[in-house]
Image 1 (spheres, helix red, strand yellow):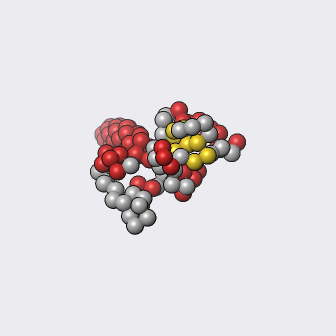
Image 2 (cartoon, helix red, strand yellow):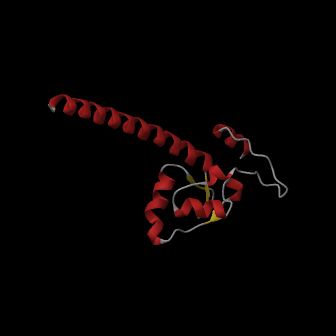
Image 3 (cartoon, helix red, strand yellow):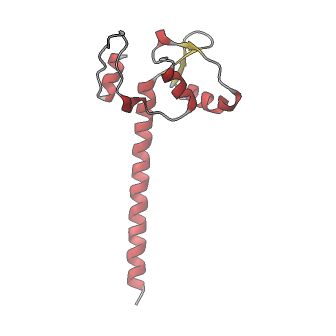
Length: 119
């Protein structure tokens, strides 16, 4: 886990319990399944837990397994790739920032054109 945290610019240090300390800002995730995995400390293959999602969470479960963030070690035992989840969120945020920036430029140009048309 420590080597993976280096990708996010964070190097975890083992605490008194022997588990790697993860800063709180990395634990902010969306979705009930991701929060449940963090609460169960299922963040590495050796920490995989037996998990069966509720029917209401089936769509989120399928999405997380399809993108490779929720991984299965043995049948029915899963763990959350927290670093992969955050890298995916960061890449999506970059795309949204670009779209928002382009939208702001379009709105600014439209306002300038309207300002010139109004006497």
